[in-house]
Amino acid sequence: MKNQLKILRAMRDWSQAELGQHLDVSRQAVNAIETGKYDPSLPLAFKIARLFGRPIEEIFDDEFDGGTDDGQR
Image 1 (cartoon, rainbow, N blue to C red):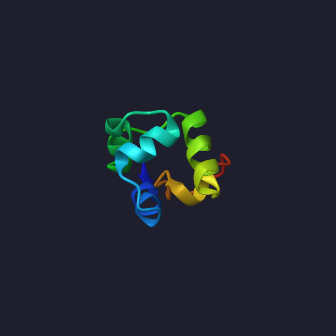
Image 2 (tube, helix red, strand yellow):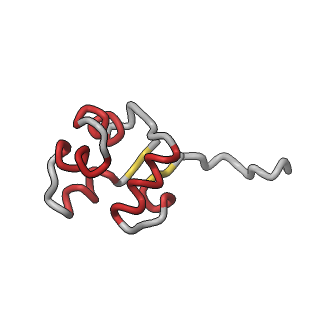
Image 3 (tube, one colour):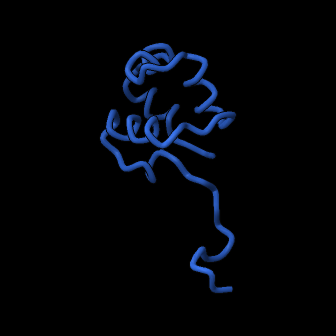
C-alpha cells in the first residue's frame, strides 16, 4: 500500500522513532509502514490520520484502479 507517511513525518521534522512514540509503535514499525512492507491495522491507520489531521484516504492509497467494486463489469 502506498502512503504519504514519510512526507507527513518530514513536514513535522520528526524522526521515525519520534513518530513511533506518538503512535505507540516501534521505529521499525514506522519504517515498515513507510516502505510499504507492512499495512497498518485499521485502528493504527485512524490514529495516524488523527495525528496528522487528515483523512485516511489522503494518507493511504490501496493502489486499486482496476474497474469498479460494485459488482458491475
